[in-house]
Image (cartoon, rainbow, N blue to C red; front, top):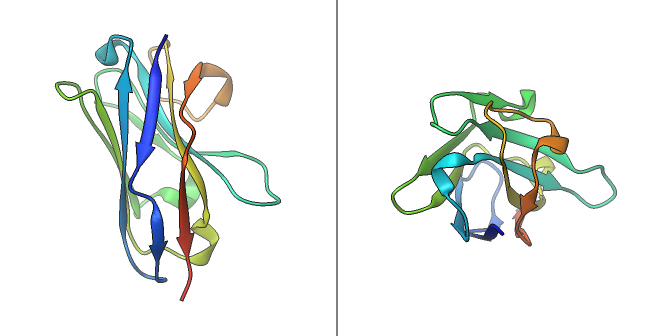
Length: 124
């Protein structure tokens, strides 16, 4: 059973940056595809970015391209999301998710494990 715990959320002004972290345990991290999802109040949960097992392939949602960067450290069992040029529309609970597939994906059905999430609020 894979356990995931996110951290790094908080309040940031529009135009600011945040770096989210996700600590994984209970599984072989390097064999997992990983991703970040978000859930804003009153909206459907949506994928932000996915990464394959090796870290060599990524899939970004259109809104995340050019502003968000996913990375992983298999030695530390950590996943990261660097978010830049944040807008109020980015306000949501962000969760990291893991799956046993092979490809980087934004498909929620491919992810079997997720953490409780960390709140990101973008406001002046």
